[in-house]
Amino acid sequence: MLTLGLGLVLGAAFGALLQLSGASSHTKIVNALRLKDLTIMKLILTAIGVGLVGVHLLDLFGLANMKVKELYLLGIILAGVVFGVGFAISGYCPGTALAACAEGKPDAWVTVMGGLGGALVFAFLFPEIEEHLLSVGRYGPVTIPDLFGIHGIWIAAPLGIVCIWLAARLPSPGGAR
Amino acid sequence: MKKDIPDRHGTRHESANPVLAWWAGGIGIGLVLIVAVGLVQPIGVSTQYVVLDGVLLHNVLPDVASKSPYLAKTAQGWTLATYEFFFVLGIPLGALMAALVTARFTTRLVPVEWSRRFGSNPGNRLVWSFVGGFLLLFGARFGGGCTSGHMISGISQLAISSFFFSAALFISGIVTARLLYR
Image 1 (cartoon, helix red, strand yellow):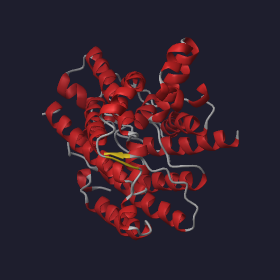
Image 2 (image 1 turned 60 degrees about the vertical axis):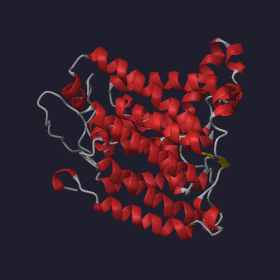
Image 3 (image 1 turned 30 degrees about the horizontal axis):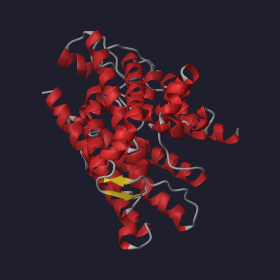
Image 4 (image 1 turned 90 degrees about the vertical axis):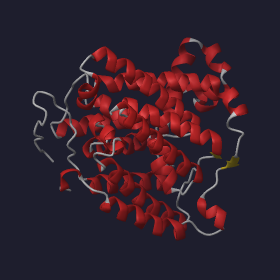
C-alpha cells in the first residue's frame, strides 16, 4: 500500500513536471525534432545531467537501486528507429502522451490506444523477435564504467557537467530563457 | 504559479509555452529520478502498456493471454496493484493538476503544427496518431524502454544500450520530422 502511494506521488510529480515544462505539447516535440525549438533537448539534457551525478553519488554510498537495460546491438538500433518514426508522427512519447491525455488532447488518447495495440502485437511476436533479432550482438546489461572497471562516478560526474553545459549552450527560441 | 499564456495563434490554443524554464523542469525530473532510484528503482513507463494489455486480455480471454510468455512474465500475477503501474497512473494525474492549477487545460483535436502541414481534418490526424502510438510502443518494447526508461534512466546509469537506443531514436525522429514537415 505504501509503495503504491509512493508510486502515485512520484508519478504525479513526474507528470506535473512534464506538463509544466511543455514536454506534453505536440508543438514542442515536433519543433524539437524539426530542430526549430530545442527547449525539449535542453530539458532532457538537464534531467540526464542531474540524474547522472545524483544516481552515481547514491551508488557511491551503496544506496542506488540500479536497473540496467540489456544491450543487443541490432535490436536496440532497429527499436530506436521504429520509436523515432512513431515519435515524429504522433508528437508524443509513451509518457508524455499520458500527460497530454490528461490535459485534454484527444489525439493523445488515440496515441495511447495505438500504443496499447503496438505493445500487444509486440508481446505476441516476442518469441520470433527474440530468436532472430535480439540474439545479434547480445552483451547483457553492460554500462560504460563496466568496460573500464572503474566506479561510475568518474564518468558520470564529467559527463553530467557536459550535459548541463550543453543544455545551457543550445539556443532558446526567441532568445528568452 | 498562476500565469496567463497569450494565445499566439488566434483561436487555436496549445499549451506550448512552458510555465517552467527548461533548467527548472530538467532539475525537477532529475530529482524525481534520483528519489526513485534511491527508494525503489529507476523510472519507466512503456512496460506498463504491456501490463495493462495483459491484465485486460487476461480478464476477457485468459487462455489467449497465458499463451504469450512475454505477457505473462511482464504482467506478473495479472495485477495492476504494483508500484510501477501506480507510477504511470500518477503521470496523467499530476499533469491534470498542473494544467488546472496553471489554467492551461485546453482541448483541440488537431495540433497547430499538424494542421498547418496536413490540414485540419480530424480523422486524418486521429488515424496517424494511432499509427504513431503503435510504432512508439512497438519500438519501446522492442528496445526495452522509452524516453523515460532508456533515455533519462538509462543514460543516467551509463547503460550502453541506452546510448544506442537514444541515438537511433533521435536520428530517426529528426529524419522523419524532416520528411513529414518539409
